[in-house]
Length: 270
Image (cartoon, rainbow, N blue to C red; front, side, top):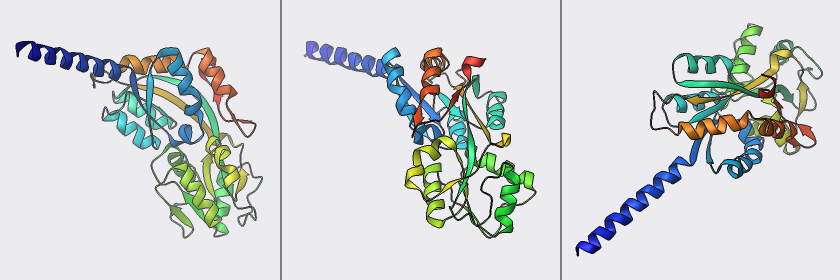
């Protein structure tokens, strides 16, 4: 009987040790829907696992939700694209080791008949004013994402409150928002990466691009282990280190959809 009990204890301890070891090799990443929908992470993560042995569990949400997961200690690191919110996240002690990772840009897309007559404009605020003037429909993510934050900042620059008759805030990710804009033959703002991933499924075209205010930078930030000692800080740092190394940066630059580069690596210029 004692031998059986001893064996059970050993098995229990062995199982617990195996579970702990497995947990140490798993990293929880909160990131924007754009890195998920664009296919970038599906492209990068297998190579990261091959190089390091770590598995990354991806929790895709808007930037606001991703940063809140970091604030709650529910993830080990975040990959987001809202500089002011990220700076606050670090300043308040939730995040450490912020690193520039890459950038792309936002574009305004809309129906091919272009009822607001904005196609070809390079001033995004004038284009937004036209959408209101022509009583066209604009679909907003309305989800506190980095894209939504950028959009609200642009409306602020127009001095127009985004509550006009054609404004529809849907509280959805970028993919569903693009699908709704296509169904409604409406305008919306999207990151270029998600647009390239979805464009063949949509009855929309790029209307406005190239304004420097549409620049879209991404950072990777570790959750502060002093605040949450149970997070996998070592794994998170290993992933952050890997993302900014020359191999991963080259992979980011080389990633394409429909023959177009989606992101420009930034870490190699630091």
